[in-house]
Image (cartoon, rainbow, N blue to C red; front, side):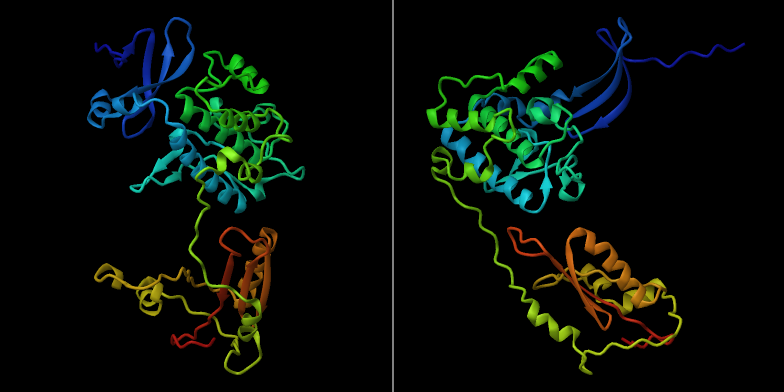
Length: 359
């Protein structure tokens, strides 16, 4: 008679550890059970050797930044957030952990896993999914009545500025409901070492009323913010003149596209690679020079006019102006962002059974 021995489970204090929920470079998150209360929790386990090896303990001891240094990073943060908003992207989880510095000390925003785009805004013009990190989340997100993604991101930026200058959070409670009450009342106080200009700016940003909260455009005019401010610089792109596109759609013989009623032939992988530059294997053996043109090609057994109609059907709800003719199509964004309008050119090409190009 054999006796089945239950698998041993690791116990840390009053918690019994279970399966791994997630794993990062320095830590694991385990599912666990409080053996005294029966409550289920998540426990983060940090590799101490890794922390010491990468000097993370010393980085935690740096504490708050000097005001000028904090302002410089905050200015870069606002430039980056403003750019995202100009493209209809709302981050919704801004916090120091999601801010990176490159080798030149330039701030970068990371982790857009909770971000939303303008197409997700409902008819009332608001977002309705409550998300983010509790200490950095805006009051209106907690109220579950809808919120403006721009205003909620600005609130999170204000919390980040406070943390950079103070070395601790403006809203921090062990009890979640007590934390939410403090956030909704904007119940915080600035340390004595904050300058009067910094205090004034932070209080205008951490306004619990999103309608009166400071906007990014107002921030750019603030005296404290403007000190040493460097406006963002974007590489100049080639201007797109829609009048010049007419040549693509005229009826000249040079640009005329015709279609023959022949059933397209299927192509195997080797035929496709041999006829398509974008699938060239040359990149595996030698380095290409010059600019890279972003281009996607695909084959289909559907007729070109049907494919063009499907593209047009998908593009119009996204705000694209569509111009087409002779199986060529130009999609032009109707909103101008920081780097100009987004434009997409599409061209349909059909082939005969012997591989010769018809159009």
